[in-house]
Length: 173
Image 1 (spheres, rainbow, N blue to C red):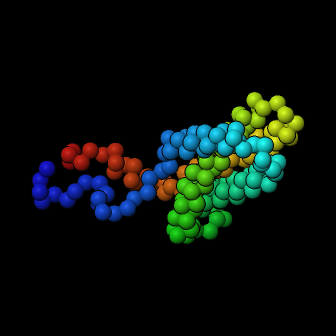
Image 2: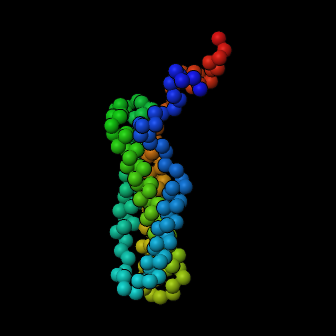
Image 3: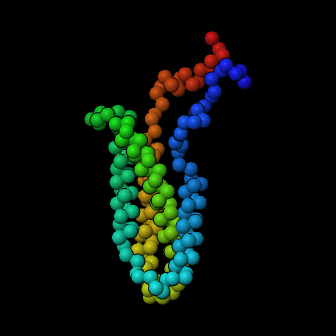
């Protein structure tokens, strides 16, 4: 490498944000499932019955983030009738999406561990806690999917001239 040539890629001292890795979400979900199983198996008898409100909140967040993904993508692509997008708002949506996908995967893992344990437990209390647990699992997975969609919707599309320049070989003249 020529010592006078500039370094390739991002500068090492500059922070950069990358797309959410599915492996991160899977590991977080599995850890939460194991923690839920351990917690529920040791303390289920002293826990109150599970309310439906966590599932409702998670589903509401998923719907809001899905709507944000839909409108943000249209604004970034400058579809007719849409206002231009504020770059700061897009950056905030990306941060929200990254955080929501991680939180959603943790909740999904927790509810998956809870559902698994409740399916093996044959008591009236476990039977009454199963529907809110399944609803929480579905809502959590919905939040993860909506968050990943929002994150993807915030990407800046390549312009046609950018693609053409990338396809051209710089060594040919």
